[in-house]
Image (cartoon, rainbow, N blue to C red):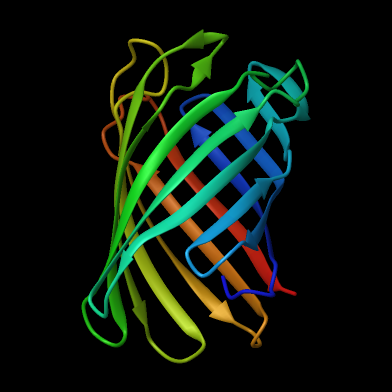
Length: 212
């Protein structure tokens, strides 16, 4: 993020995992640069609707992140992000626990129009108030088809989604359209890869980002 600007990004996501369905509305992040190498991000609490036999709805936990660029050349840039949820959500849907984590990211410039982004990290989330450790790995290939349209595809891996649970693998693709110098819209769709859900396993999201 350039100094002197603030970005607000908001999205809505629908997920189906077997018999479980979930809608997350108003998932909003505010990005504020502190310097050329650092920025803070505030994640506002989204509204979550879950259906798994019974229906539950309420505000999810909010969160905070800090991102610092470690190195940057014409070909490779690296950064580290520290993050945690904050126990601010509704008791019906949120864990209401601090869930810290860290991710190391590397951006590789493949050409003036293409880049590869690799993320490796870990976190200490909770599920039904039980804390566990989880590894995170992802790779994303991004390509600018024009000055306004960016296409991307990604794969990512979670070592588990619940205590003692199996690993989770996903693939996704999407597009971002720069409507103006300050406004961008994006869409993303993805699916699980052999996650043994016992049914459909997919998600899709729509979002908008605005610079101020």
